[in-house]
Amino acid sequence: MKIVNYLDIEGMEFPAGRRTRVVVGPNGALEAEHFVQGMVVIYPGGSVPLHDHAEEEVYFIVSGSGEMTVGEETVAVKEGDAVYITPTLPHLLKNTGKDDMKMMFTYAPKKIADHWEQEKQGHLK
Image (tube, rainbow, N blue to C red):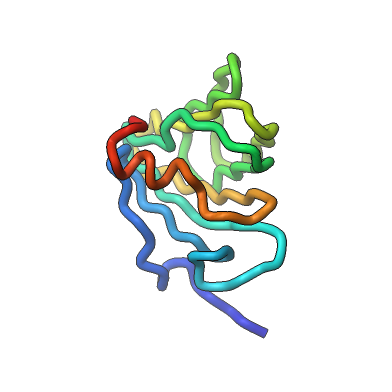
């Protein structure tokens, strides 16, 4: 058995206003055969910028509130909400609250997300 506390993972700070910690995945603390999972803290006014990818994904809002856009639809999200994201649909999550938003993501099949490097290089905002 392997146990990891996500708070012990330094993670990556992103320009759009968040820290992402990969818990399970190719660049994470644990390895799984088929999926990637991690925790994200999105600071007030911050986001996971608009992006798309071929993997299916779920965002689970652990705490906080914000707006989730998937395709052409934007809705309010809050603690306890889970959002399924169909492969190839553009999506964005923005923290519209006054406190940090915590979000857990899971996607499959596993790979290192291309949009992370694109954001670090300033191509996504």
